[in-house]
Structure formats: structure tokens, C-alpha cells
Image: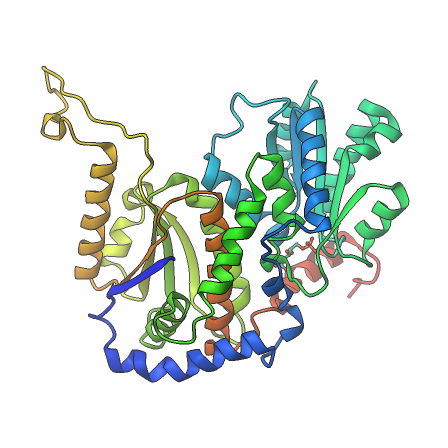
Length: 434
Ligand code: PA5
């Protein structure tokens, strides 16, 4: 079970504050589970964790095997909820540099369609030169501009390289079960297609083919991921303050009410950065509406202590931190002695790098708490495929409960459309003239 340690928030809030919100958290949890809250038609992600492979999951495993066998590179096209989850899992479990040295049998995975940058596109084209590749295109609506443009280019590249028939075998679509441009194209061209159920919104879709197909291509055991999520579904259904979901949802809301408007979500693992990006979208898009919500910021320590550390320690006192921790890996690195000791590090001789990291973490938390920044600790234990599934589900549940406590619909995102409307008008898209 993920442990939420709130011992470092007591300087900012008191026990009665927490007890006062208990009823709201309990009501929010019931609303989420029973479907009586706003947006309840988008709660089908609650049904996604399974213990045994369904037909869809067996097809995902088969498709991933084919991609692994016939591709040196797999390009995953998507943006937002159709991209962040799989990248988060892959980088957390395999590291941000996992592509180096990989090829056919265990393909490199590149992500495309998550920007409109020509430099990024040119780099992708260069990386694909002379390589056997397949494309997983993910879009629930099937009309999002960034992935649509990237996919058009990649489809043409595949057709030029392999001819139409073989190209069609190398395209895997993940989209709405019955509507949208991508759904129509996939049916028309006969691409292998996986479904994002209508009742699952983008940022809650990581346990569908959106996340599972790229993860399986990366060699992650997706049945373990799903079992971890199934564990979470059982463990975090507890209706009391013993439940870490309640603790996290309650404390962040109490802190918001006491003027802490920004939550920094941190880990001391560089591979966690994209997971922080996934969390940022999950909470940002779910809670940021009606003039409410905590501003979610993903931060990587110790790197960002050397850029944001000053601001955290002594800037505006409107933030708090959530630090995500994992058990150390089995393989340890021990710092050696150097007879010259020019760098002055001999006092650490015989210590592991992990010991230094632990001291950095403890020192940072103590300094920040002293400086008026409350810290929530999230201790996740062993980091493996199963834990990633548990963490995804734990955070989705926490987000749903937290958003209902805040008084917003966690499952819509009306504000995301504003920039799109302006862009379409500027681009001259039909129907957006005004
Ligand atoms: O969470 C969301 O709904 C969004 O982030 C979408 O996932 C994102 O805009 C991509 O949309 P689509 O999958 O329709 O291309």
C-alpha cells in the first residue's frame, strides 16, 4: 500500500482542520463510487483494472509482439491524455535513456504529435531514416491537430517505404469505438484498432490500449500493471481516514483553503519526470475550473533544487510539496576513496550513492518545512510494473475525490477548447470563420 505521511504539514494545518473536512471527503468518495457527482458518465476508468486478460488485452499483447518482432522503432503518436501515461510508465520503469542500444526485438519508442515544432519533426524524420518502423496513433476524438498532422506525415512515410498494403499492417489505431475521423480512417483502411471506451476520458485512459499497447511494446508486463491497479481498486476503497486516498485528497484541499495555491509534485528519480507530467495533466485539467484548483507543478530533485530551491525556500509562501519516494534499487553504487582527495569527498568513502540521496531528501524536507512549506510524503515502496499500475489508479482515485471536495466536475475540460478555436480561425478552418 502507498503510504501518505502528513507529519510535515502540522505546522500549517491542525487536526481539527482535517477532521472538519472528513465528511466532505467521505461524500466525495461516495459520489465517485456511486456515480452521483458531475460528469459521472466518465467513470468507466473505475472498471479498467482486471486480474485476467480480456479479449482486448490479448489482442494488445499480440500486436505488441508483432511490433517488437518487425520494427526497430515504434512511433507513438498522441498528445495530452493520449500520450503522457505510456511515456510516464516507460520512463519511470526503464529510464529516460531507454532507447539507446535498442532495436529489432526490443524497439526504440519515439513519441510524436505532441507539439507543432518543425525541429522536432525534422529530428524524428532523421531518426527514422533507414529504420523499420511501425506507428501507434492514439486519439479519442480523432481530430486533434498535433497528432493528426504528425500521423499524416508518418502514414505517407510508411506508404513510400513499404507500399500501401504493408504500411496498413504497420499502423495501429487507438480511438473511440464508433465515431471520429481516426475511427473512420481505421475502419476504411483496415488498420488494427483498439478502443478507448466512450466513458473513459483522455487523462483517465492509461489503463486502456492508450497506455497498455506502448507499454507492452516497451516490454513492460501489462498484466502486472493491471494487477497493481486491481490491488489499488480493492485497497483504496476503504471509507475512513486510514485510506491514503482520503489523506492525500483531504490535506491538499485543507492546504488550498489555507492559502497554499501551488502543489509541487516531486521525486528524487529523474525517470519520474514524465510521470510528474502525467500527474500535472490529471490534476490540472480535472481541477482547474470555475476559478478554483491548485496549480500543479512537476519538479525533479535534486536537479531543480539548483534552480527552484531558492524560490521554494524563501519565495512567496503559497506552495506545498508532495514528495514521491520509492525503495532503493538492489544494485547499489558505493563511493570509493581517492588518496589525493582533491574534491574533498573522502568523508563519503564507503557510503552508497543512495545514502547520499536519502540525506539530501531528509535535509531538503527539513529545510522546506522550516521555511514554511508543508510537505506530504508519498512512500510507494518497491518500484516495479505492478507498483506503476497501483500508482496510476491511486492518483486517479485521489484526483476524482479531491475534485469533488473542491466542487468541480473532474471529467470535463471546457477551457482546453479556447486556444483551439482561435487557432482554427487563424488557420482558416471551415466553420471557425468568426
Ligand atoms: O484529457 C484529455 O481529454 C485531453 O488531454 C486529451 O487527451 C487530448 O487533448 C488529446 O485528445 P484526443 O485523444 O482526442 O486526440
